[in-house]
Image (tube, rainbow, N blue to C red; front, side, top):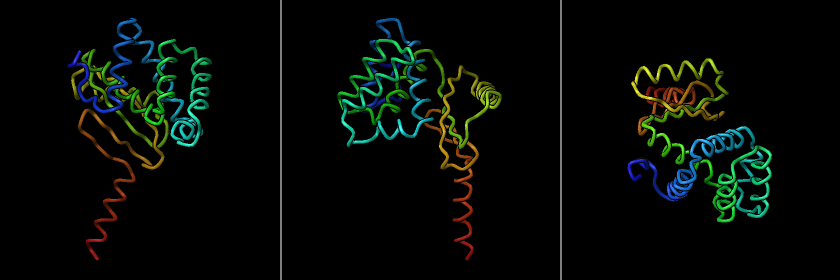
Length: 186
């Protein structure tokens, strides 16, 4: 089990590991992963939900009730609902996205997959996602688990993280390099 936890540390790693062990014992690893991917997509697509989860002034009871209603409507597993409820009561919803990332990383490690995270300014089409996945599989020669994130601050291009490696081809990064180069000229 310890080898499954590569790259998972700290508070979020402890929560993710505990959830993974419970999901493994109950034989619901994939179901919980599916629920968690849904939660991440929901948080990334809804700024109000992101603010709700990160706000230190909104009472944990209200945060927990909101997440419970969302998960109930989505048909999430009991384990996922209980886990998010516990995370809420412990005032840890502000790191829920990171806990989910760590859970999915543990699951990928267990399956011998490489996890690649692609950040884009706008949502990627199914065709773009498929092409990116194809390139990763041919370059790495392994099973690749692709997660996508949205971040309008990068303006355009992609930021790719595979393990400890990062490739930043974002427009924001290129403009920053250009700005630094121009400062050096003058």
